[in-house]
Length: 209
Ligand SMILES: Cc1cc2nc3c(=O)[nH]c(=O)nc-3n(C[C@H](O)[C@H](O)[C@H](O)COP(=O)(O)O)c2cc1C
Image 1 (cartoon, rainbow, N blue to C red):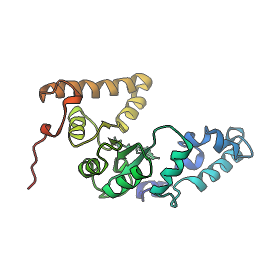
Image 2: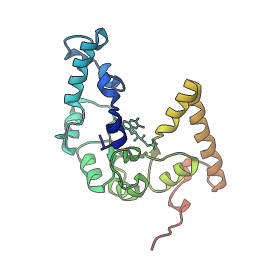
Image 3: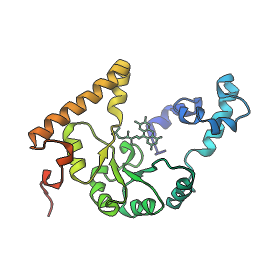
Image 4: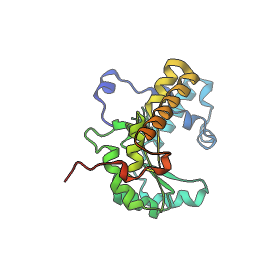
């Protein structure tokens, strides 16, 4: 986790109450290592949180470990948070089927490179060997077109659908997605493209150099 002064001042880390770690708490292997199901008591949840603390943010994981994951599953493996072409090459060499170019929504390293700025070099490094996805800052149709034009095969949509969820539940999520898709549809037409498949670097004009 990044250094977040506001969260530190407020002592705000809901994970420590078992909130926001459902991907662990619902995992059968994680649960099989607990003496008591976390739902059973406050103490059982505290033990589960302690087990989670021991696993989250494992600094020893390296790009080469993707090869081990590759042996365990036939599912596609995408590595997220890649902004350097060398890292992209390393994880694809180890068997990743995709990379997600991302600075995690700008929530980790202050002043980190924007995902969109990192995208062209990563896309060039990966070529056709794996899928290139992008997130961090996708908010409107033009954002999607720019990412596709700079080499992304697809984009991921971060906080806007969560805001929709907060405002209006499931219908709010649908609405957030519909707005993005409608905006994309219209902007594609206005830019002279019949579909996303047609979008390439010709959509852009370079303002550098
Ligand atoms: C509340 C919150 C929690 C997140 N937790 C994680 C996480 O545990 N691991 C991770 O890789 N990214 C995490 N992210 C980043 C998102 O996966 C995603 O990269 C980011 O939200 C995309 O940027 P955007 O919201 O600007 O579209 C989190 C984002 C938010 C808003």
